[in-house]
Length: 341
Ligand code: PHE
Image (cartoon, rainbow, N blue to C red; front, side, top):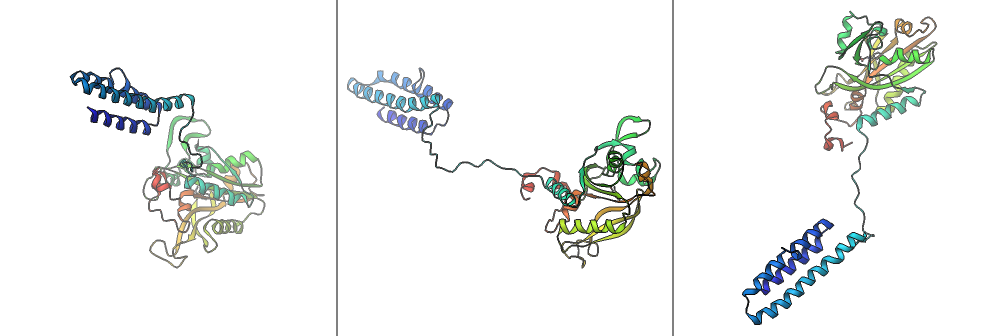
């Protein structure tokens, strides 16, 4: 009996010391000192003891009971009055986990600030827009086969008599005529960064991605301005040792049209397993087609312009040192992946 009581005391005191919240203390109190608690159960066993043992054990019993309640009481009081026991304010705190911007968000911020330095204005246009802005005003009539290249999601909604269907924008070029309408006249120097959607998903494509679209319209704008702007961006974003080139291509809304390539970050243009003879493809560009200027009510005799539209994710992946094997990882929301940036 003596041993049982002493063990019980040790066990109770250890639990009380370790208890960290009032509910737990309350539970311990009921368990040891409550009406049907352990101590009361034990006291029922007293009957079976011899008389001389009874006095001795009774004293020990009382001692233990008060030791437990003395350990419990002040702790419970402190919780009620808000006083904190054993608080060492000199210990370093626990640092809460801190997040950071998603790599695509940082890329968007970096791209905006590079263009803002040379006078481009960051704008945003609808990511769900009329067919007119996404295609028709860009010299792509409804029946034109080139539209198929954009693998567009079409919204199941009534058509507008003039603006046509509603689509999830497959490129940021819908901002071109919208910007012409907003400003009414040149000079125009915009960078439109927005979400785009296409029916595609593989290692280098996600159904939702971002593009940044540059548009400059003014008097006497020519290809050298386009090339100069591209070179400036490439050096700022990728570093001074990367070069760009224009390759002839076709878009309905630019004439002439180009695909822009950047030297590979591994071989710097010499040619390696990861690139096409030293070059990586950045995206499309060209001189704004007169029909697009007309759609935006701009005098195509007086003004010319250039435009380019590139994928944010794709451009970001071409930064040196970044080897992302699958673009879809960017949107998998796996913290282990995102923590690396
Ligand atoms: N909108 C084109 C695309 O999505 C890119 C582009 C933009 C090409 C501007 C020329 C001018 O591929």
